[in-house]
Image 1 (spheres, rainbow, N blue to C red):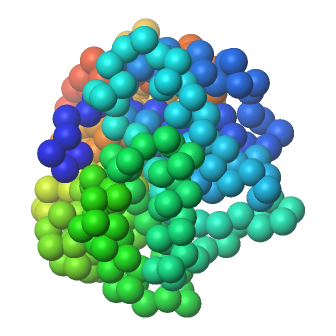
Image 2: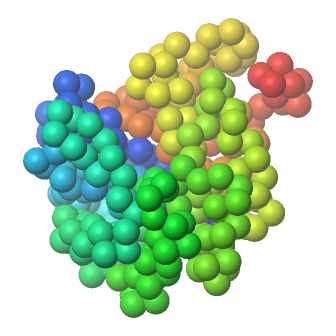
Image 3: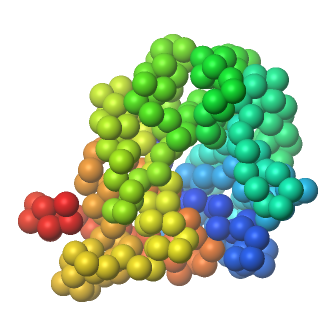
Length: 278
């Protein structure tokens, strides 16, 4: 559940389809998104900054919008979450801009890229140390009040920032998206705050990132071998068992990858296995 919207246990992170040097062709990306949707995925996560170059802002958003337009299923049942506040710089660099005026511009740009009148879930991408967090979240609140976005979220936030956002949004904070995986467990406190407040927690890079997703070894590999499933499924099932508010959004660029990830929703780990995984 995100806000008042029911979504599948596993979402799709669309970022890998727009990474320079690694992105598949558009046809494969669309097949991947369709495979996810056909498998029951109802949450797709994107961002305006997911782009192969600084000159192509909104690349991933437009790709998701095109895939949805070509899908034969119920598009109204799919929640598309995007983000603003992270920027791209020449040379494939990254920066942040949390100014209210910029977030409004970014939101308008995302509305056009996604081809919608209101964004299902709009998330502030990353705090800007040059802008008071209250001002940034206040801009998200204004977009919510104006109906440009249906739900509001934040990303890469610490417990204090989560509580601040929850208060400024008047209890309407729908989600928090932070990094969380077996190799990156420092977001445990944020998960606990989300559980306390009834806010969805969306782990990004839940399998450890593009360079590590295929390298889940040790106890995850052993449990996977015993169960006859992939280590990736075990990893996602472990995250689902952490708290009811956790909704992993594994990235994928091939249909086979996301289909395997979705199957984790049906994998229930025993207390002994969870203890082994830590």
